[in-house]
Length: 333
Image (cartoon, rainbow, N blue to C red; front, side):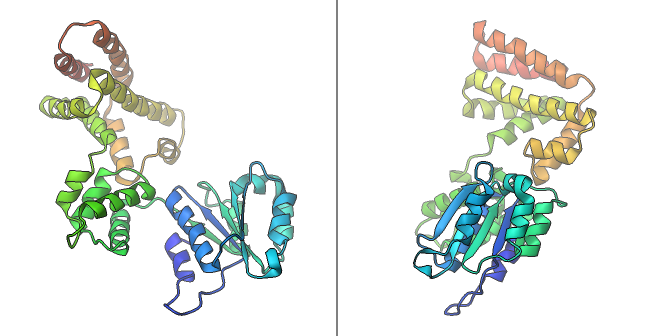
């Protein structure tokens, strides 16, 4: 099930006792905020204070984990929560033992497994669904992230304009934890007003520098000199001089080169995107630009950056002039 469906299964009306949770939940995927929120929701439903234990599946033994799961809570009352990080490691080495033990799970404990991204055919997912529930904590696409920001801001008591929420999502290429932090800052910034406006986002949230470097690479590859110079000057204001700019450019070009080499060697595009942490529309833009590079072009541009790095350290040429020369030379490489 998706995380939204998990929340609905434990939702209650005010004054109504929440439904009993399942004996086991697996939270898996690439969105850390959902996994944290899932465990927190279980804490709330169980009304926990100190009846919680946490293990790491890469280090803990099966006996140690099961001893905690099947031991009664202190004073023999209530239900305790047992959280296992990296459960895929424990499952890999103790699959038979886990299945045997949880064939009859205890009524006095809820076990929460917090895993990384798992393939859809994972045996761990199938088993978790049989015992309790497997909850996919998937990174949201742009429209869903905008809706999440609007909901989050409303819950905090400071609504946000839809246009402002859209701009925030476009400027922050991070997970929901990062977005939640920005919503909190914006709420404080807009304190005393009815809602967070687009102008607030423009004032408080800077443009993601990674995207600007990508924009510069785009302009260079398309040989759009005016646009490249415009983005260059913006980056020079934000980066740590010419050296900082070249470091950022080299990093972005290495990502393109790494993706090109991986695809050429037969690695699936989805695996390349996952390794480079490319999300949603950002992934589509990245691969569209990659396809536009000619064979050998990325290697030539990367070598040229190395030569300009040495020039930046030894030349008496004004830094801005040197940076503009670099951009022009990259367009010709």
